[in-house]
Every structure is written in structure tokens, then in C-alpha cells.
Length: 156
Image 1 (tube, rainbow, N blue to C red):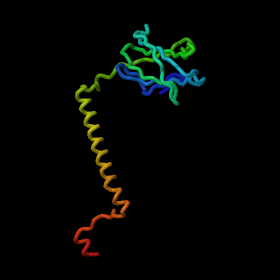
Image 2: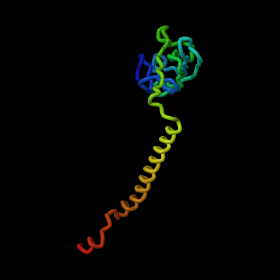
Image 3: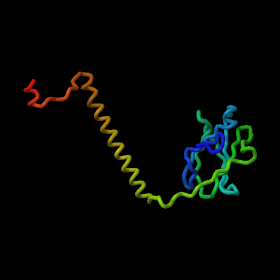
Image 4: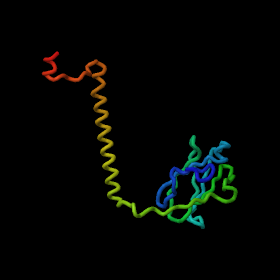
């Protein structure tokens, strides 16, 4: 989702207590900067101020940030030359929504559900690999025809 030109998030909404991936494709990325840093804080007072280096990818400079329940995420970007991209002096400011508690699941049940899904997928993967390993020799030798029952063999 693009909320401001050249700033992208991996989600449609910024929700407190979740991790968001930020992608920056602004001026520094376009001009080939090698090192870009994000300085961010929360709320009107930029609480818990942090500065971290972003990772350069083909999709821009990226970083994952844990969102606090402080109302807004505020940040600006700088390059290795200490030049700033602060949204023309306005900074980048985005509203953080409170998590929906009506749909909250107890962590133990959530973990159990994840484990169950993982177990099911691992079983499916094992079965698929087994079928492939069994089928390859049959295909190579040409012995992949369905076995006929005794009655079918007598009819032929």
C-alpha cells in the first residue's frame, strides 16, 4: 500500500503491536544512495526515537518496525551524506490504529492453530515427496500402468 509518494507498507492498515515493513523508493533510492537511515518515533512527541539503517533491495530501501500503541508513526529518511528526506519539512506521519479486540484469539489457541496448520502442510509435503519418489522409477522403466485385477487379466 502506498500512502505517500515513494513510501510503501506491506499492509493496508498500520495496527498497534504489529510489525510493518516500510519500503522507501524516494529521491535517495532514485539517485543511487548506498546507505539510507530511517529515524522514527511514535506520537506527537516522537516517543522512543530510533535511528536504523535500511536494507537496500531492488524494491527500494526496506526495514521492519514494531508499531507501538501511540497514535502515530513518524519518520524521516537520511542518506550517508546526512541529507534528509523529511517530506518537504512535514515529516512522514501515519496513523496507527488500535488492534481489534473483538477478534482477538488467545495466544495458546493461536499457537495451536499454527502448529496444526504446519503439521498438516508437513504431512502433505511428505506424501507428495513419497508419491514422486515412487513414481520416478516406474516412469523411467515404463512400468507405470495400473495393475489389473485377476478378473481383468482373465478377460485379456
